[in-house]
Image (tube, rainbow, N blue to C red):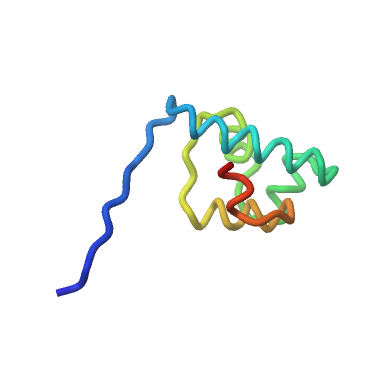
Length: 80
């Protein structure tokens, strides 16, 4: 039997989702990047970057990792 891990899905109105978006926006601005540049670097559509920053989307872990790499910060930094 393969062990499973419970994953808590957050709703888009969860304050933690908004914190991630605020942290992403701050890191992007600190890096001097536009949403379009982050989209190009990460492979995440610019509209999705905008929605994540606005707290309207709760990205998957793989997306979080790609966005963190695009703004050159450790993934955990975006979750603080």
